[in-house]
Amino acid sequence: MNQAQWTAVDRYLNNLLVPSDPMLEAALEASAEAGLPPVNVAPNQGKLLNLLVLASGARTVLEIGTLGGYSTIWLARALPSSGRLVTLETDPRHAAVARENIAGAGLSEIVEILVGPAAESLPKLKAQLRPPFDLVFIDADKPATAEYFAWSLEMTHVGSLIVVDNVVRRGQVVEPGSDDQNVQGMRRFLDRLASEPRVSATALQTVGVKGYDGFLLAVVTAEAP
Ligand code: SAH
Ligand code: DHB
Ligand code: MG
Image 1 (tube, rainbow, N blue to C red):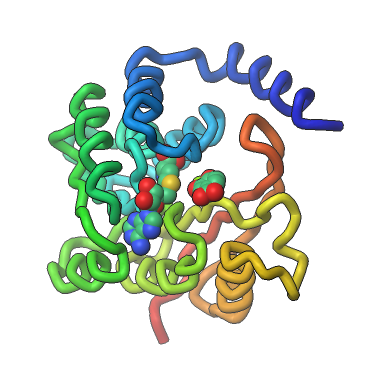
Image 2: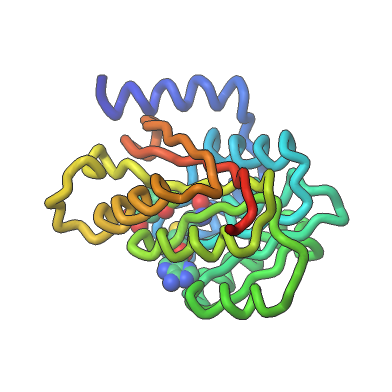
């Protein structure tokens, strides 16, 4: 089993189940042209996010880590026209590319990009006392994942879904002595999650066009004590 095979299988499955879409392709092209790193979710992962919104009936989504808006578009597309998506991005250049891509996909009305470090945007968002989010997708700077998860718990309700990308990191997540801050960040997040009584969670390893990684799904099962 190797990368070539994982890529071939992703291609096969995506050809059948996730037909290429001009607006999403355009978003990726514009992102590449602007020099953004190609770390967006894979098409089948994007579709999974889309289906999670659809299946859960989510009307409000929070995304942490916008990049060029590729995952944003997948998520927002599953929302009703009365739905809302707030996405947080620290890099103004990424946010500018995302804004164009989201407009190109006809989603500007339901997507709001908050530019700035998520650690600053999250308290501001909470202070606005909006209705809680039905689904949160965490996919920004990995060392801060535990903090983003804690904020997510403050802004969701019983039944909300919290999805976290990149929890396996080529398997390095099992290495307690790893000197990779992304790995240590995920380990710290997973430790906290394990002792968090308000959620029920699982994590799956994934292989595909993005190599070997994993994603995590948590359901909020109880209010804050
Ligand atoms: N969700 C995107 C990929 C996000 S990549 C997709 O799948 O299409 C991670 C993004 O998080 C990058 O754009 C990076 O600039 C942003 N980021 C990094 N640190 C951040 C921070 N402290 N606050 C908000 N965004 C941050
Ligand atoms: C990186 C970030 C991601 O969100 C991802 O899915 C893959 C890689 C990165 O920064 O290396
Ligand atoms: Mg990711």
